[in-house]
Length: 318
Image (cartoon, rainbow, N blue to C red; front, top):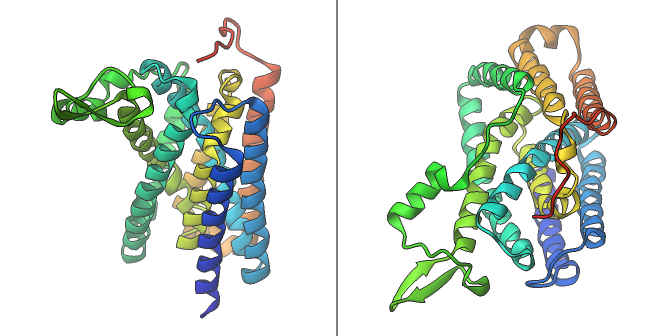
């Protein structure tokens, strides 16, 4: 077994053991998760991610480890944006709080499966057609500019989304949660509950977010292991982050601008890769990327806390 295979094996074992521990000890079926429990779970997943960072440094050296850390922080910050949409989806379908945990878990596992497919295809295409990175760079510049100049987020209405319309067109849906079930029988035929719809929407919406985040991570590293691991650990921690931040997430008014600056920076880096490689070593590039990500994300969060926009409504429980 070579070193690369060993790292993949360790990564797989860590994910499986962490999931068993999270589900078996930190989570209870159909039970509301408190802020204290969410804090413990968030700390748990962050510790797991940082533990893998340490392992990667020991096995592969500083550069891959710092690339992984940069990618993880990029995905972690973008996942906060996901929470806004998740809150809207739960509210729109009136999901009861005791079902949040399991619905989020299934939606997130579905999202990870879809991301693995997306990453595998993306990395394969880039290896075959390196010029696609320049297309990703232009896409990130465009996305970052739109995100930075947007004054108000467009209101997302789940029932008007294309995914929901497709589900409604091809599947018999019922307007209740089936008391925690995803499929029920009505009039002798199977029907799909609102919980089923929410799970599908969570996975699909996360994949939409991945259209921004994965090209951004590929601007940091094209190593599949780094992209897989950073995405997996960030998304797995999203469930606990949801419960931890759902009451305060609306206060991060300027996080969007911080993320936009990071996307623009990575987009420029991808477009100017040829010249940057002549001026700076890969180690220096990784350190600069990590510094920009940490500065922009932490700075935008701190600025949001100290300069909350006027007229921002008080947080309401969902």
